[in-house]
Image (tube, rainbow, N blue to C red; front, side, top):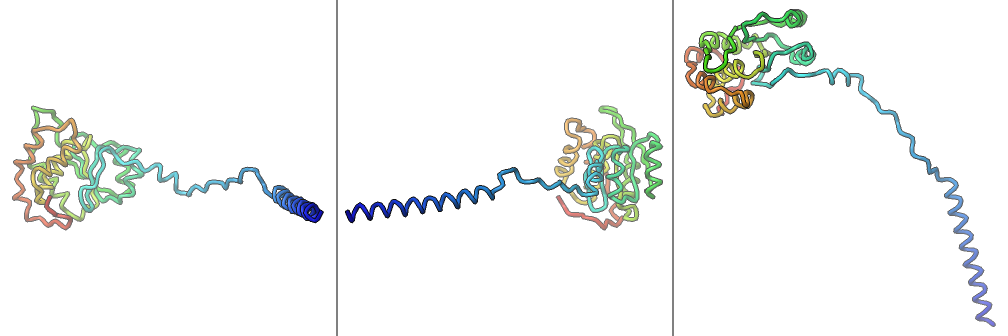
Length: 216
């Protein structure tokens, strides 16, 4: 009988404990909010729209401190060009500069240097050394910096001018050609590379160069 009584008391205690546990769980369940958490509204920076409008011109790249290169910029690129705070543009095509581009230059106080080089295709390529030499003088003049060099696509005429600048910076020819080919890609011209190889920089070596002149 003692065993039965002890068993009965134990069973009653277990039932009471289970009731208390069930009650706790029930009360917790009633307090838990199972609905999805409220999502905070996304905060969009006030200038996010401006960032989306910063479109660089075709083949844009930095050449050196204060010197940039690209293809022909158009209206879609003007906001981006404003961030460069350009002082001048070196334009390597013979055609007149478009009115919209001229208006942009005037509005932003940018000086235009035009060195017209015809965009002939091989084998009828005649790159005038004197024109490249005069353009290099404008590039080397830090009073014109920051400066953007461009032609139509930013490949051949711009590539030749930058390649001759690299020779002044004492780059080896293989590095000069590698950079040229990176922009010209499948349109690379043997005549352009031959021109850069034979270009005489001796008449320009007396000009000061305040930017990077590291060898490559």
